[in-house]
Length: 306
Image (cartoon, rainbow, N blue to C red; front, side, top):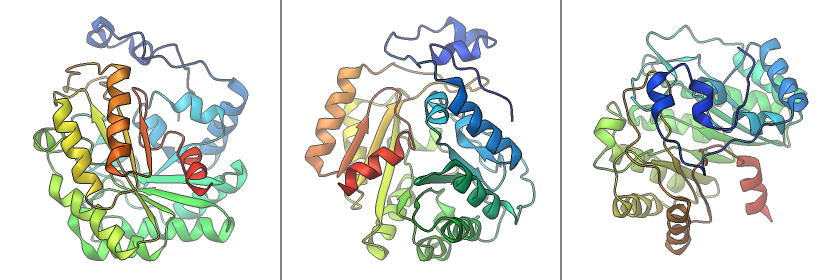
């Protein structure tokens, strides 16, 4: 895992990609330079325990901020995804065998970093009989054994719509279950070709119906060619599942991606999305250009507990 250098804008991190450098990045997409000390501590912990984070694998623009505050989103089940979503920077291909020791190493990292709220996600593992659900559950249990007071947020794939797989995850009793729709219904077949819009909505609804005390969460990217009305329609669909929390952020094209940014949504439009989401009844809304699914997840949870 390489060390990170955080620059002033997301595109600055990818000057080697000429087409990215030629795009006009608006002034409101800026990343502050974080303090090196706390960020180094997180990096060193992850390296010593041979752990991956989606922060680095997906080239998240906020990873410097999160690392500098001593937080990270752990990515389990390896670093190679069985799906080929064009928006995502995670490596695609044939995954490695599941590392059975990984849950304990994640738990050790949580303990060393003194985390109060931890986010766990994964690549898609369509190659596994349970699609990785058992590994999610084992990770939750390992963390709880190591640090019983920690709250745990899982950002899960759709498990190919398997009720059995989702039940395994729900039985582990995460504090928050997150599953992202990512985009509007019309664009879903292009943006997430191996997923299904209605299957994702079903997952969110099934989770809420079978674990009503657990918070559910979902997220959207904008700037992919959708209209504002389509965003609002998708927000309504997500809210109809009983979903509590929604995040909305700007899509930024990673290097080597064939999926272009169609528009840079203005900050005031994100404000309107937030106002609409509040009116729809979401308990918490994070809507801004650099918002990502797990960004400031601990702060969101603390806000909801107050």
